Length: 343
Image 1 (cartoon, helix red, strand yellow):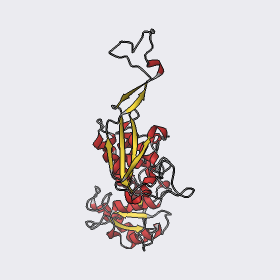
Image 2 (cartoon, one colour):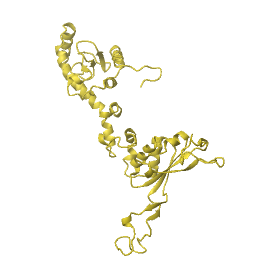
Image 3 (cartoon, rainbow, N blue to C red):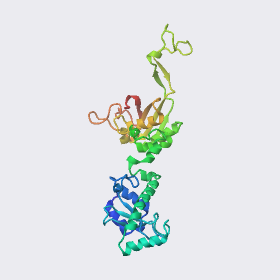
Image 4 (tube, one colour):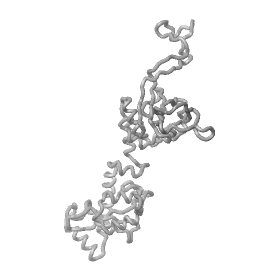
């Protein structure tokens, strides 16, 4: 995207700039920008037919050592495609595999007799060889692969480390796919720990984050696993595995994600009706999984506490408080049980 006060360069303007001063441009970045301008065309080296390529690679027969990788760019002429002359890979020249007298012969026929048959024939091989050379370079560059997200091989490589390499597995939840790749180190780790979860949530949302472990709660026992007198079966050994009632108090499978202190705007974003709540659920589940229970504790800055006005402002139970005395500490009384709101 163009910066403020600067117009974006069009494809034609860029081609004209390269044609006027080709020595100022490098081969790889020039071809990369041309590919970005012609998004309707296949990437260089990926086309099934030469007619689908956005440009043609040529080599001018020369007898001197090349001072730059590019020799020129022709955008007008008999060919409907821009013709990019390069000087680092080809049959002609002092670094080429052909005898130098053949370079001199091709140069003489082209310059003095307007006979381009030999150079045109050689350019068929130049175009294919240079296209494959560029394609091999582009496949090893993550930034170049990101120019076209639909053909990004690095996204597949990195995503495969933690199970989202296939296109059908991308964007399966509210956590952005590119962000998942950025946190591949955490998501591909075999060990999951509190510091990793804090780093993931804090890095994704850029808010102060703390995880509180071992949150006590009542865990419901499924009816078929409760103790019944006289029926035998499981959970019937007195003093060992007998539990009276349909629930048990325990703290080994629940934790709390504490966010804040937050501004009122950020606070409302993490409410179940806000834009960040489902993303938070996806971020935590991608790291922790589904086997743990957890809750969200939102902390509002004391100076951001709103005044409740009936019929105008304040969501009951979320952003409304009864004023009893001046607020000394941050407001941290809101607990959201994720299983009640997550999609």
